[in-house]
Every structure is written in C-alpha cells, then in structure tokens.
Length: 332
Ligand code: AQP
Image 1 (spheres, rainbow, N blue to C red):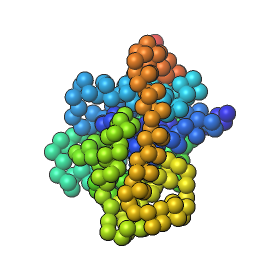
Image 2 (cartoon, rainbow, N blue to C red):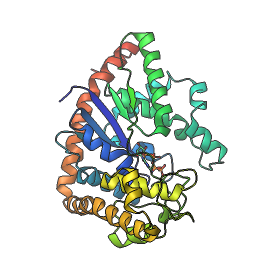
Image 3 (cartoon, rainbow, N blue to C red):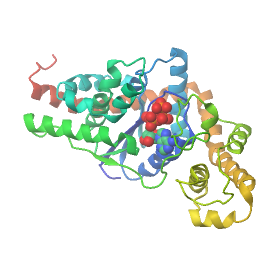
C-alpha cells in the first residue's frame, strides 16, 4: 500500500442517501486499496445546524455501520468520529488565526446561506472551511476526495497550508483535491435540478441507504420525468430521465448508450422498474449488513474507539510540530 494519505468525511446531518453512496463512499472503497485512508463521521461539522441530540447520536452510529457495510475495512482504514479526536478542534483554532476574513467571505456555501436568509447564521457556518482545513492538514493528507461543491474549501485549505509554511517553514503537506470522474452528481427524484441531499425537506426526493425495497420502488416510480418518452441522456431537456440513467449506470455499470438501446421503445414504466430493481439490489446487502453491525454494539464501539486512537496517534506529531513552531510552551 502507498504511504499516501487520504482524508474524507460525511456530516451526519441526515440519513445517508444513494447520492452519499455513489458520490462518496463507493469511491472510498476503491481508494482503500491504494492509500492509507482516514474516513470520518464529521459530527462537529454537523452542529452548524440544530440537531436533536438523540437523532445526531443515532445517525453518527448508523453512518459508521454504513461505512463498514459498504465495504470499508475498519482494519485497513482509520474509521472514526471527529469529536473523539480533539486535535481537530485545537488545530482549527490555530488555523483560524491564519485564515483571512476576505477568504472566508468568498466561500460560496457561506454566501449561499447568507443570500437565502438562513435564520441560524452562526459563526460555525462561517468558520466551517477552517475546521475542514484542520481535518485535512492534521494528517498531512495528500489527497482529499470531494464533490465539485467542496473544491473551493480544499483550495482554501491549500492556501492556509502554504501561508503557514511560508511563515514557519515546511509544516503542512499541501493537499490536492480529488474529484472522481464517475459517480457524478445524483439529483433529487422530485426536483432533478437540485442535488439529492440527506437533509432535503422532501424525503420523496432522496433514496436512503436504509430504505426498504418497497420504499425504493415507490420513490422511483414517482420520480419526475418528462413527455419525451425516450430514455436518452440530455440534462437540459430531460433532467429527470438523465438522473435516473446516472443512477442506473452507477448501479449496473452500463454505459448511457447501452441503456438507451436497452429501453428503446419500451417507455418510462419499464425503465423505472429496472432502475428501482437495480437500486434495490445495490443497497440490499449494505442495508442488511448495516443492521447486523448496528445490532452488535460492542463491535461498533470497538471500531470507533480504535479508529479514534489510531487517528490521534497520526494527528499528534503534526500538532506538536505546529505548537512548537508557533512558540507555545511544550506541555510538561
Ligand atoms: N447527491 C449527491 N451526488 C453525489 N455526491 C454526493 N455527496 C452527497 N450527496 C451527493 C457527496 O458526499 C460527500 C459528503 O457530503 P456531506 O454529507 O459532508 O455534505 P453534502 O455534500 O452537503 O451532502 P448532503 O447530503 O447534501 O448533506 P446536507 O443535506 O446536510 O447538506 C461529498 O463528497 C459529496 O459530494
């Protein structure tokens, strides 16, 4: 295995969706063969929105089980919960002092929330990219697999690392974003212009990993399509059908032209049934395995305890180096 390191995480702000699986976790499973990977449940990022405490705890544990059930090996990877490794918060404060207000003001996700008139516009939303930089730099990560919308945050992380290195000499590895080509963006079933999200107000728009086969079938059958009656990939004219094609292609490995040929003259009903069937079979083993893992609380605890211990061991040398460079008095 390469010594190169990867950090990635998902925030437990909702139940994981088919989008979380295809857009993130499925790629992580492949990366585990090539890199030393840290896969995190970023619960500290989740609290920028208000959560019911019991729900947050349940989701964090479910997410952990789903990582493992999706094929992430807890021995080969470091799988842990962010708040269990306090070095993230420590480094985040330090890096905040090396992040410029002008830079944070330019972050698109923050600007979006401001323009949409977000009521709970707390400082955590503003400094979120700094914590994300700390997550990445703490482990001297080489690569950060992210969706297109997080690329700007990785750019900021690089700028912070370069700035710190410039002042204090080589301290942080400057990471590269890694945006997987396949997997694309999975859109909402009810609004194919928007991303399928964990925290969508309309649960009919998202397929959740833990959905039953019946729920999946119903959601896919109700998915928004168009009047063209052709299964062709055209995100402008046929965003709903194109989204279902992306999902079907990810689940079966078939190319778009093969899919178009398969459903030539068959109508949307047949296509939707096939999509539902493919998704049900894709998610079935993950759901069943997740349920098994969740029922074994001792195993779950063992995974996150040993994950946090291993993560802290990797984080500590970086933090030690940073505080030394800053001029803090070393701990006795
Ligand atoms: N629909 C999607 N299509 C492709 N990739 C997706 N990801 C999430 N949804 C899709 C990818 O999952 C990773 C982790 O995302 P996150 O949960 O930390 O943040 P997010 O992108 O904001 O996900 P959500 O589901 O939209 O969460 P909420 O609703 O809480 O904002 C990222 O790599 C992301 O690209």
